[in-house]
Amino acid sequence: MNCIITGATKGIGRAIAELFAKNGFHLAIAARNAEALNDLKADLEQRYAIEVLTFPTDLSRKTEVQRLADLIPLHW
Image (cartoon, rainbow, N blue to C red; front, side, top):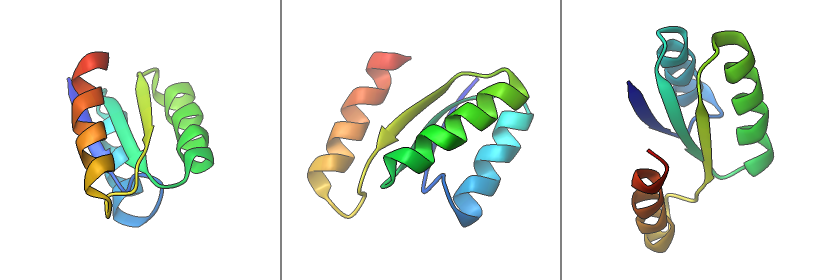
């Protein structure tokens, strides 16, 4: 199963990412900080043997939200 999580590198978003990863979901994670996304990707893939796609995205920008919505289906 697959799951999309925004705000995945901090707080509630990170906790949700951890929970879904622990339960075997493959993740598409989005946040503004690309480095933090890559760090989280490496950690989750190593600990839970899942696939994690990263999408640096500023959700306050409509064009970036649309880009995210357009890209995710191309990868799954």
